[in-house]
Length: 267
Image (cartoon, rainbow, N blue to C red; front, side):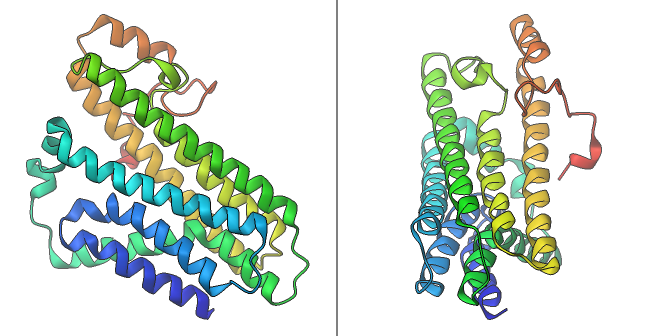
């Protein structure tokens, strides 16, 4: 249990960037928080680290650093993003209680996301008969997710350079309308499957499941937010209407084309 406390303290420390600006709890605090947790896992469990578990930690570290740096760069270079980031709703002062609760929630969620790897390493350290195959599967899935997310961000950036006023429907955006969020779902699915080889106890399964369900909810909530925003920006464009009617919003080959009507996804 001590390792979970250490992870939580690290998560709280890094996600505290949100005290500078509220949205940082969910953006750069998230990215750099995951990176910090990956490093913490590698240090705490250095005596039992293996090639696939080292790879898992490395992929999480790369994911977090890439995301954090990407968001910082976009904030500096994109006028459109700054309007969203520093808009009236985002800049509105939040009650102290709300800020504290969001800070704690984010820190707990990030620990929950990496917890399957932590449980695998902790149980291995105690001599449990863990199955390394699942760590390899998890590492591959996470690497694929990071690659997909990176490609999606790069393709969107390139498309916006050509025509900043047009929606993006090229490259991986032909597959789903939110391929970067799909990448994250693949990443954290990769983390969660590690549990199948980690000899998890009931409470470990519960923590891992809460972390996984939590990030799935966040991704669908983000997709809904983007859908609503794009409807305002591109709603009158016939090409956009044709695009959203044939391209799933988040899950490829699953005919879910809109989540805007689901108020429970509003966060």
